[in-house]
Length: 303
Image 1 (tube, rainbow, N blue to C red):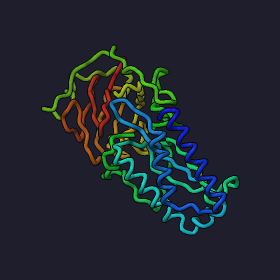
Image 2 (image 1 turned 90 degrees about the vertical axis):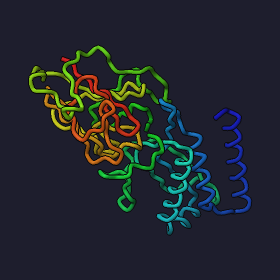
Image 3 (image 1 turned 180 degrees about the vertical axis):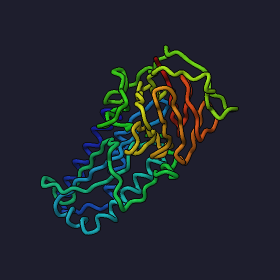
Image 4 (image 1 turned 135 degrees about the vertical axis):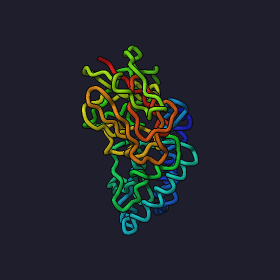
């Protein structure tokens, strides 16, 4: 949005506030819904591959009188506002990362009829228990708006995560960067569809290796596998979280023992392919390309 448009929006807000003070008007949910749609429009950011990331966390601040008036019907109002945002995002074909959340908050500085909206990308926004979870195993992972936090940065520094963000990856502000995975790893024998993706035993390498998954979207995000099981998905329970609504919350599991990596689809909605071949289980080798949703992951080994 250009400076002139932003100024016009601020001017519209000031005019609305003035009328509220003079006439004592009340905030109505429809006005808030329109403001939240503008909030999404103003804060949507482009991602690699022509996709667009919109905020998933929305806060509506109301004056005390309006808050008290809406608080008695707060859950219905929130459901309506969420529905409006979801419809708008789907219509635009935009992505979000994390659950969609709308909250109403009281403000002591706003007069009757005034309200303020704000938004952010928050991959750790929890889904309320009463809401339908669209992304558990076997889920319908949010209708294919393309993908999403997305985030304060597309590398998403999620606390406790083991994946590594290359310094040249996306930084706050959604800067674009070059394709980022290492190409210099040595390769060894290949799993083929004819043998179910498994490497024959005599071809397996038994020395200690390191392994990683690289998100092939230009962000330079990669996840260093450790021994044991790693869940890849969109949900908070996944160790490697992907900004893609076509990915289930728990999409695939990759088990790494220091020598071999076994992939298993966890009953995902949209399925998994390895090198273009549908896969339920697959022994990965260096250079394999795993596709989940709209995301491409490149498996790399080194050692």
